[in-house]
Length: 550
Image (cartoon, rainbow, N blue to C red; front, side, top):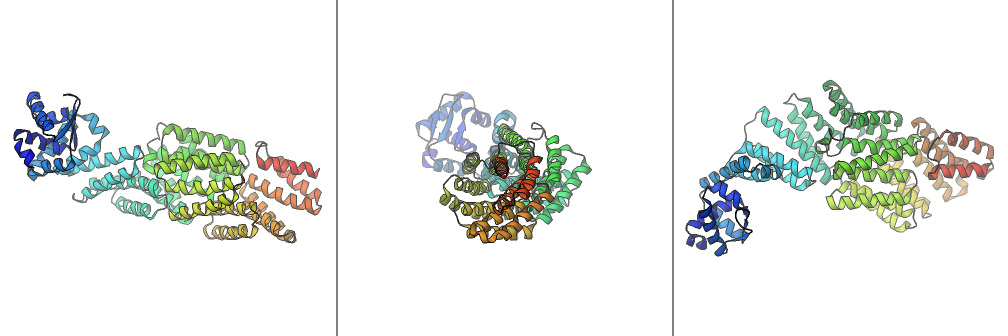
């Protein structure tokens, strides 16, 4: 402080600079201080000579940085509060009018200066804008900090419809960043959307209620609370149809497609996913990823890939999967890319392509590590364990899968847990531990009865049959019952790929029992239905068994 006082006239320049920030540019300081060039350069020269600030470059392109943050603090605190406010107001005004590129690229600067100047409404606007910009860079922690600062300021304004609308907008943006950093089913996600839903009761704009209900829907879906999720998905479709808004309709078909898929209504699920894909335009709907936390086009293509495989179209599923990955890379939305990579790993797992599944899970885990996505980290770890187990690293794979499941549940997630347990059961079978596998399947089947998540149910019963046979050949009757049950459920779901697997398992058992004709008839009918995917493991396995039966 004494050093600043000795500089006399240069002190005023240091004070103005301190209000701008630790680092400041010559042109901005000149604009806000309104000093002529020679005076400003002389006083800055004195500050540099006194080692108050360091200089980079030559005026007017030069920038300066305070030697220490404490020096900046001293200069800043030496101003009267009213003077500081005036300086902040002047800086905000200059940034807005003379430096629009800075205002656009760094709205948090305007938000800060507006806040300190007491310009609350303007500050709220810029904190929201700063949150959006940070979210677009996938800087979600930073985005949440900006948005929470804006929300805190909003509480100081009188209650008006405009304030309520701003608060809803900020909660929606905060929800998307929370999904990325905490997972879809984190308690904080529900709290944000519940608050936004309460605020929407004071508004009549369905466009604002829609993303709020969409956020609550994904929360309940991922927690496997399907009854609540289904009611919300129906409400979303009703709102979209009433508004006749293509973007809303796109975002309403995605929830219904997901709900129907997980419940095992595969053909109906694909109908909704196909409608969503038909409505999707990458350029027009790119911003929806920041509204909902994920890109609807990427998600629908990934889910369509799984659905097509289940329905018996492995090659068409692979095409949709490739489209999802290409789209995710084009739109450059990291969380959506995480979905596409995990979705691809799942499809390769269904197709029995272990190495490809591992490559996609490794990519998903790497992305999740870099970006801080615990949801994709956990699911990727679980699926990587399965891929390792099938490539000879059984012990390591079986260790990783429960770790992934624990981390997954720690995010609040329950959806897909029967699938993960089935993969773990399969790995136990690979290791020659049928009892451990059957324990996993018992837990998975209990979950299915509790939640109604039935899309992988046929495979659970098929695996049960295989594992009881692995326990003892004396359990052939029990295994046969499980295979029949798997086939019946698969047929009721039109899940031709899972029906083929179960039919292959039953035909193999019948072949062992000498029932060659029955085995050939059963497997031949299912295999004969297929028109594609003949290079996949399941179809090659079925073909080899049919040839043996001949």
